Structures are given as C-alpha cells and as structure tokens.
Image 1 (tube, one colour):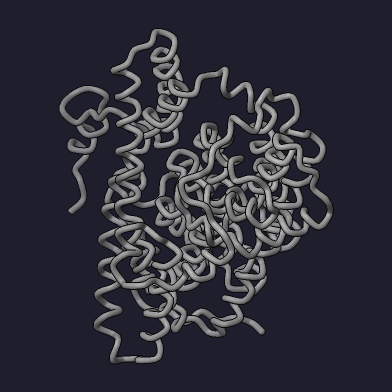
Image 2 (cartoon, rainbow, N blue to C red):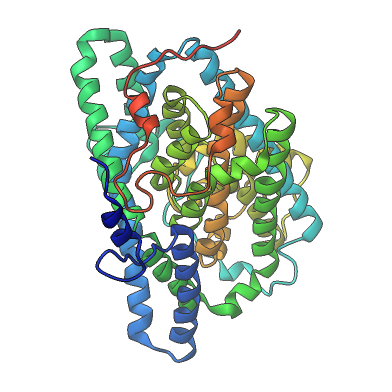
Length: 458
C-alpha cells in the first residue's frame, strides 16, 4: 500500500518525529578516522601519554585481529566455491588461463616500475642507517619453504597457524574433487555456499568498524614511530607511494583505455569502496567480499568474479609482491653496501611474478621480502630495518593490490566479450551492499540467485 501524502510529509519534514540525521558517507568516516588518528598519535607522542598510546595500540590490534579471525575459513570456502562455480561458465579453462596471464603481465610492469624508481632515487643513500640497525626476522621465507610449505601435514594446523597458502591448496583440492563428484557433492556445495554467505555477513560487521580501526592503526603508527623515524625512510617511503601511485593511477588506467577500451574514471568510481577499505585494513583477504561486490557491480559476471577475485586476493599483489620487494632489495643492498647487477634485477622480477602467493593477502609482506632477499643472497637483517615503517607502507601497497584484483577480471571480461557494459557505465562510488552497515540488497542479487551460463567467445 502506498504512503499517504501526510505520512510522506511527516517523514520528509526537517522537524517532527520523522526527521532523520543524514548518514555520514563511509569514505568520509574513513577520512575522519585518518585525521583523528594522526592527531591522537601526535598528542600521545608529544606529551608522552602512556594510556593513550596503549589505547590506540589495542584499538588497532583488535580491528586487525577481527579481520584475521575470518581469514582462514573465508579463504577456504571462497576458493572452494569459486572453483565449483566454474562449472557454470563456458570455456572456464580459457578464462582461468587469461586471468593468470594478466596477473603476470601487470606484476611484471609493476616490478619494472619499482626497479626503475629505486635505481633513480637510491633510497638507501644518506639515511644514516647502518647494518647494525637491522635484525633477523622471526620467520624467514625460502624457495624450499615456499614449495614444500604448500602441502600441509594435517588439516587443522593451517587454520590454527593461519597458513593461507596451505589453506588455498586444501580448498583447491576440495573444489576440484567436488567438480569430479558432480551431483553427489551438491549437499557439500550448498553448505559451503551458505557458510561463505554467513562469513561474509559477519565480515561486513567488522568492516563497518574500519573508521574506528583507522584511528587506532594510524594513531599508534604516529605515536610509536614518530616523524623522526619516518624522516630516515623518507626517500624509501616516497618511492613506495610514488611507485604504487604510478601503477594505480597510471598503468591501470592505460590498460583499461587501450586494452579493454573502457573508461578508467568509471572503473575507479565503481572500485573505490574496495580500494579505500584496503588502504585502511591493510588486508586483501579482509577486503575480498567488498572487492568481489564492486567487481560484479562493474559488469563482471558473478560466476567469473567469484573465481577471479578470491584467486587474486591470495596471489595478485602488485604492491606487496612487485613494487615493494624491488625497492626494498635496492634499499637493503645500499645499506649493506652490496652491488646488484642485471642478473639480480632479473631474479627480483622472477620472484615477484612467481612467488607472489607467499604474501597470502595478509597484512604485511615480510615473507615475500625474505624470499626475495634469500634468493638474491642479501642479508636478512635488512628485513628488520623495514619493519618499523612497514604499517605506513602497507596501506598504499594493499590499496594497489586490491585495485589490481578488481582490474584484471574487468579486462578479461571486456576482451572475452562477457562484460556488462551497461552495468560498467552506471557503476557508482557508493558503498556496496553491506559496506555501509546496511542489510539492503539490490535487484542484481535477485537475478544472480538463478544460475546462469556465461558465454565466452573463442
């Protein structure tokens, strides 16, 4: 029954019981959190307020822990469901191959930009840092660990120790087995899809706390590290941000315009909720539900997006696994007075493209960095030099990661002629369903409830 004029007027009136305070946009809440965090961090450090320093640390830590709490089951069920969803897609092998190919192409471009910036700016020169300032990391990565660590010893430990690479392996095996079983596996698939929906709903609630988490994370970084420490890493920090910005706002728009024949501005309008959340949360996996939603909103078929986005969230890391290791290797080599040659730069590119799964979509890129350093024979103590500044660098790195994870499915869909161009043209920067704390759903979800076959041109 339609509302009467009187009831409508009461609701819309600026006075009376129907008046509602306008909601603050989610992006504005994030920005406010950033500003407040910087202010509180500066106050805590300048006036040596211990309780404020501790509070900021706890607030940020709790937010990250809440994100990590959902990581293990979310990755498992997302990968399992994404693989089984490929049965709804014609020529799935072609789509998967093209996705992996574009992951590698964009990673190569990103690592080349990182190397170029590092060679031009010499980020390790004039810092005042010495080898004695470094310390060995608690956990170091190597190619042997990477290859043998894919297969778990049991099914429990990867979840308790949050070994995402092993979780991905088990989920992939389970997904492929379910495809082979066919109808016999349908009860398991139905349960997996329900559990995944439950996890994503719970994660929305955590995501809604991002502005508060931002206050703690940024505030603690300023209070603990201070501007003096940041000053020592000024060139390196600027290099990471400039390198990521060149990829994010230079390479990606160029690929969209030339390869996919799409509007870059429209892509950023649609993908912005995921990019801004990635900047704050520093977790590709934690941002994955939002990334998948914005990718679908940009016109990528749901069946393909449900495969490519979880796959990208655990393997596609242009910021953490390409730009950052390239710059970090040059930085550490200069600190320890080690000369790198052309062969070393080729090795950096190789590690960035092949070993990116080691980053596993979690906050930080320590494993990937130790893998790079051990391959080059550089001192692992160099990792300790970068740990202090890592949270500030990780924000921009993760934003670049997530943008790339949304970009590749759009490019592949456009080239395979399965992209919904009307949806792409109308995608907005408003929060996706649930990211603003609401439980509303749109017509697209109702349409997606019925399985569809996605045609792929040869």
